[in-house]
Length: 286
Image (cartoon, rainbow, N blue to C red; front, side, top):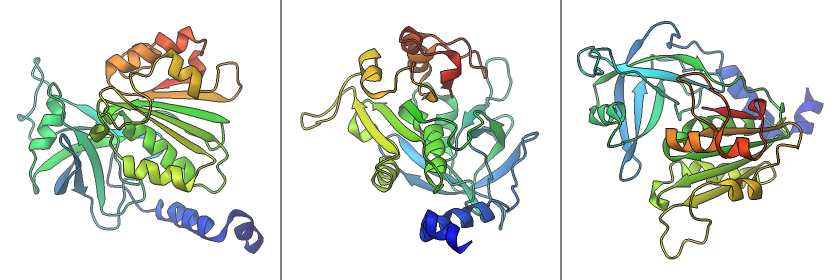
């Protein structure tokens, strides 16, 4: 064991080992039925986003595998329904670590047309939300790919961050990640502090590119939308083996880049990535 610790780097190894051991804590979440959790804290993030922290029972954690999400609905069955009278249910990816004890947190951007995001933003401390999960999305396996490009927009960063934070926490990781994250303004960039901290800690395995649609005059980074030219500049070509592209963002962005999803199913590949020659087994749409 001493040789293994020395080879991996003592601090990194023990930090990773502690996370693995903590993951053995029980989870209160259930993939078959909703559980109701109380809101214990709201932390404003920017002009339209806040982190909502819900309490878990003591000595429990979410234990969400990577990559997975949960689905949420109003705790009051009459509070939020669709046009057919059914409860509105939406997927969300927590920003808290799977081994975080006693709480689960969601960074929620309030959209004018988002009925669930507006509902969550209306919650006060002490109110509750019903949560079910995990809902498995992508079976991430360590070092399965040489390069992974993560293309996101807006609040679509949360599942992408889940992947990179999990992968980079392992001292055994050799996969190189490239995050292309588009937003309207610099103030709209969610989780920037966390992302930049990861990039600084792992300069050889994480490269981050922020793109803005409406930058201020002093912005020095790339501007505009993520298009074919941007992908060709930053993403490994489809001819390179063991390459994966993960996409998450507003439905219009996902459709333009990778083809429209079919509900919870992937749907056929399309958009810019198909035009550039990427195959279905090289692209995943969250």
